[in-house]
Length: 267
Ligand code: ZN
Ligand code: FE
Ligand code: FE
Ligand code: ZN
Image (cartoon, rainbow, N blue to C red; front, side, top):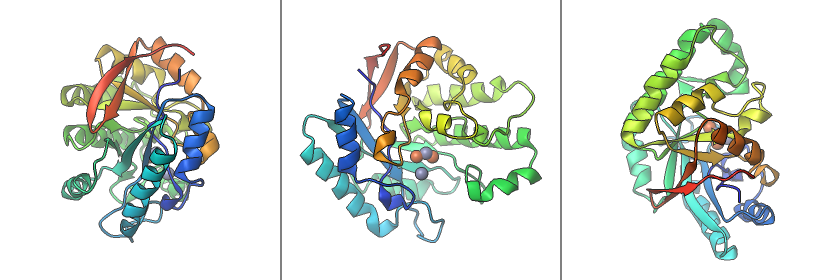
């Protein structure tokens, strides 16, 4: 049995295709019993960027997920958001949290200051940066996201490797300081298979990251980061093998922000 896919998008973010019912139909086809929608959350101002839902679309988003829940009554479908963590946005994230009965929030660091470091449109900005300093700032923001206690799960925890920029030194001290924060605040990290579809050609996070996470008993979830129905649970068998190889025996599931553990089994 595949673990739940907790990271799926919808067309409201303006760069995904397929209605929630189509993602759900694909999950049923794969024999899954649980999924969760976590589309890019709105910002307070719609002109923040152009790759998330508009604030006025939040109700439409929730209605779309509810419709899929009604249509696929045997499939557990969680209602969630992928929320950008930026220092100073905490009050806005709290505001969003109060608007619906969310099952979980996935916290993501896509931005370092005004730079979306994973955006292909801002790829040229890497050239002006020292890779090791970008990574250090990225993991520092990730630790702040964990300590904010606004999120149940931290997304794609080494997204800074997306285009293949990797520092030459040992990254484990950076991983460890974030993971200690995640453990002490009870936040899970996500195995995100979208990395296999990107230039880094590797699941987020790397094996070495995951081994430290496992030693520190940080809970895990699984996400495909599907932006199309055919991407639901893509490469999950490989992600499960990675987790088992790193020493994990269970994964975390969320309902109404409460975590529960389930045994992890090889496919
Ligand atoms: Zn996206
Ligand atoms: Fe993301
Ligand atoms: Fe995503
Ligand atoms: Zn994502």
